[in-house]
Length: 268
Image 1 (tube, rainbow, N blue to C red):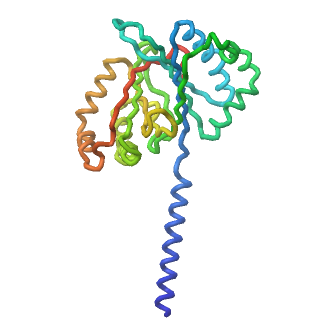
Image 2: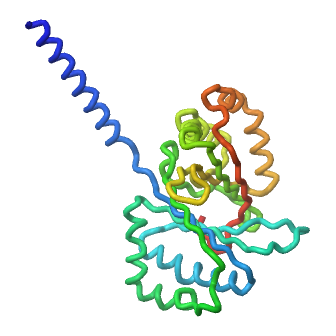
Image 3: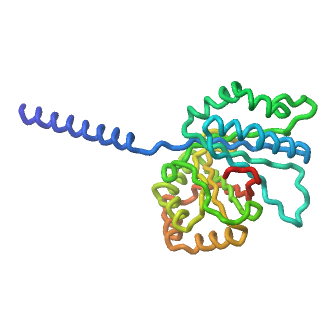
C-alpha cells in the first residue's frame, strides 16, 4: 500500500514539474508582432496620386501619433520595357506590438481630429470618384524565430532596392504548419539570416485570401544583389540538407513571388 502511495506521489510531482516547466517556457517566450498588410487596387494615375497623398500626409502621420513608429509602403517594380499594367497596386505594411493594438487603431483614428481633416479627400470621397477600386487586408502573426519586424540594412537609394514579397501556400493546414516549422525549428530563418537576406518579417497568415499560407519579405540593394543572394542560397549545403529532409517534402503548393520597391515616403 505504501509502495502504491509513493508511486502516486512521484507521478503527481512529475506532472507538476512538467506543468511548471511548460508555464515557465511560455512566460519566457518572446511576444510576437501582429501585422496588417493592406493591398490597394487602383486603375488610374489620379487614384494613385490621391492615395499617395492620403498615405503620406494623413494616414502615416496618424499611425505615428498612435505609437506605430514605422510603416512600409511599397509598389510593384515594373520593367522599363513593359507595358503599363491595367491595375496599379499599393502595399501598406503595418507592424503592431499586439493584436490588441491593432484592434484599438480604428478608435484612435476616429478620434484624431488632425487625421480626419488631413485625410478628408480619402475619407469623404464621393461615391462616383473613389480613391481605389478595391482593397484587401491580410492579418499576420510574426514567426517564433523572428518575433519582431526588422529594418533592412541597405545603403542603396530606394529607387534601386528590391523588396521580395513571397507567399507560400500549403496544400493543407497540416502541411502549411509543417512549412512554418521548417522555417522555425528546421532553421530556414537562421539560414536566411546567415546569408544576409535582410528580412523585414516572416509571418503566419491569420486571415487572408490565400490561406493556408505564410508570407515573408526579404530585401536587397538591387536586382543583381537579389539574384546573387538566391544563387548562394540554392548552393548552400545547409539548404540542400534541410530541403532533402523527408518530413519537409511537398509542404508548398504555390509560391507567389512579387518584386516591390519602397515609395519615397515609406518608413521601411
